[in-house]
Structures are given as structure tokens and as C-alpha cells.
Image (cartoon, rainbow, N blue to C red):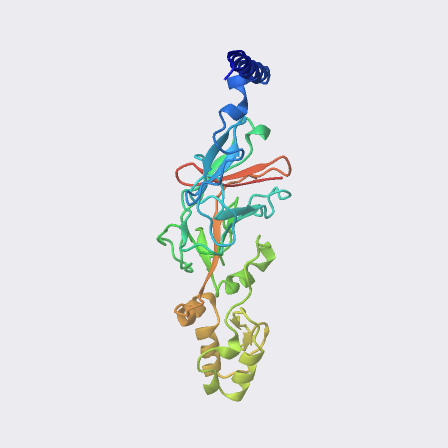
Length: 326
């Protein structure tokens, strides 16, 4: 090979390398983002790791752990301030945004229908918006009785277990002040409480109790009644306890009218149609208890403002379960 030609070729190669080096420095050199981004222009999804990628403030890719999703729900990021029950119980405003009387002001807690087991919510905290106040009010969800008995003064309180799809109505005030109301405790609604609702209907209980007691025509032994009694029971309103009265004129009255029914019929009516007797006959029914709790906070003033309010629900460990603002 000619020596002059070889030297010229070497110089040409060195010149090309030098030009590429200058161009590399001009475009950022080792400080370019692509120089540290790894072998992929866009990182692949982390297969099987339960993680997703999200950009951080420096433009790189970081990973965020997600909680397992229940059926029909989107995955939620794991937040150290969120409860393990986050998203499983939701707050509804009820009358909070317009009612000022504590015994008529209430909110509702609604459990997800796909819960695998009831949630113990006794001891959970409800907090209002501190921006509107010198400090926030913090109230605890109370214990309650499952079987609400009439006339009992020492009913045993137990934790409130919110069933899948269940509801807890949190009333700011206390129970009705009435001789017809059994006890001043929180309770689980059953299918006989409509008898109580009738007794205190003039008090406009909020929220109203259901009026869906067992139908009189379906009561046991109705087929054994005489014709007049049978017809009377068939016409009897649901959740109505017949009222008997002996007046000074010497006659018996039933619901304000002269009573012409037999003594055995009156005994049947008294034995079957009242709150206590309804429990005695139907307390073992599979559908006796509902999923509706009535819980009283026993405050004498309103808890929730009409606007600019934030209602926060925290679990027993003080972690956020849900929040509602309006």
C-alpha cells in the first residue's frame, strides 16, 4: 500500500471522529435525559408486580403500589393516611345541609354491597370542617342494641356491625322524648318498629321509621277466629295496635267505636298486635332484622353547617374512610 495514501485515510477517519465528538458535546453529552433513561425509550409495564409507573417531578419514572380492587371498582393508590376500609363506606348528606334542629339533623353511612363481612363501626370518628369553627367537632359512633325492647332500662349495648349494603343513620340529637318510646338507646331497625312509629307519628320523627310490619291477615291462627273477628283482622291496618277502652257508660270501645267483638277476639287482638307482641311472634323470622341502624349522638345543637362543610369519617385508628363536602 502507498504510504501517503494510508496516512491520508487515517487523518480522514480522525477528522470524522473529532466532528462527531463535537456534535455530541453540542447536544448535551452525558447530561442528556436519554443518556440515563436506560435501554427503553418508554419503560415497559412491570409485569406481575402489582405496580404502575407514574412520572415524578424530575421527569423520570417511578413506581406506585396499588391496593387490590374489589369486583367492579377501579384500583386505588395506597395512601398511608387512608383506612384499609377506604371506599367501603360512603357518607350521604341526609338533612345535614339544611336542618338546624339536632333531633332532625342526620347523615347516613352506606356500606358497599360487595363487602365480605360486616364492619364494626363503633368508635369510628366523624369530624366537621374546622374552617367554619374555632376548632372541629369530633364525635364517636356509639354502641347500640340489636333487639330494641319496650320498657327495658338496662339493655346491653354492643358494637354496631354494618352489613354489606347496610345503612347507619347518624342522628345528631337524641331519641324521641315520649312515653311511647321504649328506651333512649341507639338500635337496629326490625320489622316491628312500625308499631312505635304509629304511637309517635305526631312528633314527625326524622328520618321516619318504616311502616312495614307483618300483615295482620298473615298472623298465626287467624283461620280459627269467628267470622266477625276474622273480617276485622283482615281489614286491620298494618302496624296498628288496636286501642281498647271501658267508658263510664258501661260499654267497651275499640279505636273509639262501640266494641261488638267477642271476648276471644279481643284477646287475640291484644295478643298479636302491638310492638312487644309482634316481637314475640316474629322475632325468630329470618327477615326480622333489617340492615338499617339508627344511631344517636345526643347533642343539643346542630353538628353540620348548611354550606362550606366537610364531613370526614375516620376509622378507630384515625385513618380516613370517606369524606363529603358541599
